Length: 600
Ligand SMILES: Nc1ncnc2c1ncn2[C@@H]1O[C@H](COP(=O)(O)OP(=O)(O)OP(=O)(O)O)[C@@H](O)[C@H]1O
Image (cartoon, rainbow, N blue to C red; front, side, top):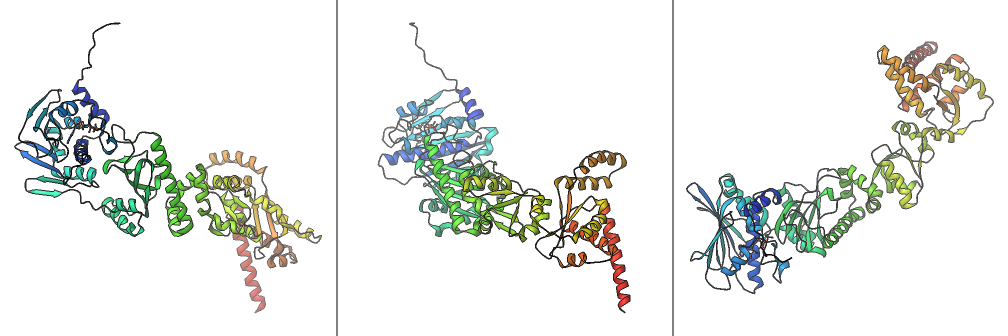
């Protein structure tokens, strides 16, 4: 096909709308774009080998109703030809075609257009450091511009003048500008002066402890860095540590948060690109699990997206992220080996997310699992401490079961873990797969089977009597030997029985209708009920009871031991048990008084 060749036309209004509504999340980014151009112009002049004192000057001028912003640098400036080629050509950037492109912040050739979001005109006075006449460029948002020679340009450098649009007037206020300039330029190595009338300040002080700490890793600076976080971020960090990568040239510091966060909570890391703030919500640089730190990072060699709100997902970013990942793990490893108190605080504060993370992430698991603490039948301890005395990890998944067997298990030299809290079970089960140590889930009934039987003919009569004493309570009674000797009886119920106890207790406080409904369920459970009262042959009281002659006394003692074992095992008391308790206590008090009378 042979036809006429045409050029694209650009509707600048459409592009400005695109930038303001879809690319930039905040109109104040025009400050960032102006600052970035000033920094790049200074870098370009330095790259040319010129020696000069870099300087960025910002001034607000009130002219009647109009507020005007003057933004000036003493960078490389532009010749008239360069104005046509770079300033006035959308998408063309002197920086992208430069050999030293890696040293610049800008690359897309669209940043200056962001000024149209807040000003209805962009005026640029510029003097190139290469010489030639100074030029003045005045651009309108309809896409037209004028260009002329001028005598009002800086000696060398560029002055941009914006007139605030009424709706964005507030962005040109001194305090707002101070805040934005400080936010974007705090760690820039060039002084930024801000003035308005008589008022003049230097926005950035140049004394940033975390950047030096990041570069040198000098532990002597740690306190200063933590003090900086307290003053500047209102963050009383638990700890901080330096980070540095070779891929992407990232250097910075991680502050350990002093409050708990969710594992999936958004990460708020403050990221600078070549010393200029890229954003405070950059999400894709740190590993996903870095929820317990907030990082300040300065990046030299990664590539930002056009909106400058994240980095391109390229190989370099993947490598940088991997390096940050292993450095953060190294810090955790250091805690596990050398700072147990620090680790304890960290795990206590971020208890659940750290456990969740370990379940999903093997590296983390290996690093932290031995430091996780568990409630056991022999007290609270870390898994490492537990494994010192227990070759097998024994755990219970039900709190009632745990209470029932806690005393007996320790008598067997076993310590049992109360694994009823979130992530306890998956963490313990994973241990076998990772470290080849046996784990065993146990319950009270299994334990009861291991109690030593007592073979004695003489017990038959006693057992018949005892069984009769408990006949309305559906409880099997046995005599076994177990330790501790001080424990006279052990009441062990199966899960079904446990549930039945709960249902019957609920029945007692329910109205008739609901109680009937529960009764259906309860009778089904009753048919499966298994409850055992194991009397301890080793216990002195039980021994005396076995030899007691008065059946009435034996019956009462058995019933009271039944209630006591109930209470020790934290089983709910039903009406039957409460009645036994009241009657039994009264009767025993009565016996006591009678014995007293007989003695006197
Ligand atoms: N202060 C300045 N001094 C010298 N040249 C400048 C200045 N500001 C802009 N320019 C020139 O104008 C060009 C376009 O600037 P613009 O801010 O639109 O894009 P950029 O900085 O190249 O890239 P980006 O869109 O990524 O910011 C720049 O490449 C540069 O050549």
